[in-house]
Each structure stands twice: as C-alpha cells, then as structure tokens.
Image 1 (cartoon, rainbow, N blue to C red):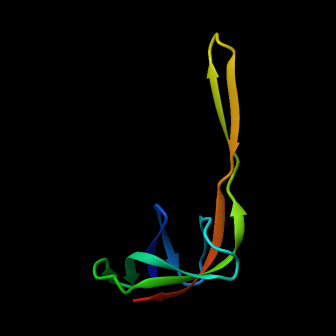
Image 2: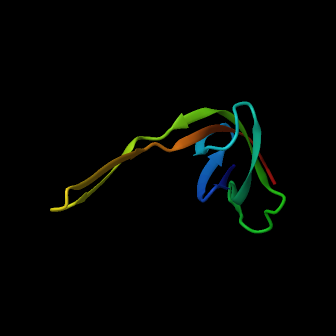
Length: 99
C-alpha cells in the first residue's frame, strides 16, 4: 500500500517506513499529519472521498538541500551580483497510512 501526499506545494509518493524530505516545518520528535491525494492498495485505487484519510509522519531531523548560486551580470555597466541559496528541509519517517 502506498499513498500520494501533499506537503506544501509538492506531492510525494510514500509507503510505511519511508523517510522523505519536506519543507522545513516542525522540531524533531513531533508527529505530523499530511493530507492524502490518492491511495493505492494492490489493484484498488482510491482518489475520491479521502476527507478522513491521513498519513501520519514522525519528524526525525533537519537537513539542507544543495547550494545553488545565483549570478547576475550586465554588460558594459560594471554590474555584477553573486548570491547563494540553500533550502532547509525536515526529514520525516512515515509511520501510518489510514483510510
């Protein structure tokens, strides 16, 4: 059994025991509930009537994504700008999928 869950503006495929990264949310040790978009159980696919369905996850820690460099340059004006960004993520472990 697996489910498609929404966290922020992203959707991810999860099964019980998976460790995924979502946008920074809660502190380590907390338990969160993520909304379900679709559930697949063998041959049965459930995509409607999932108001009561939920995926329970446990926060295991925090991580950072890869560093990306943003560079801006305008010719003949002497304008150069260099900026970096590193996205913060929360690692969570899926503990339960309930319908």
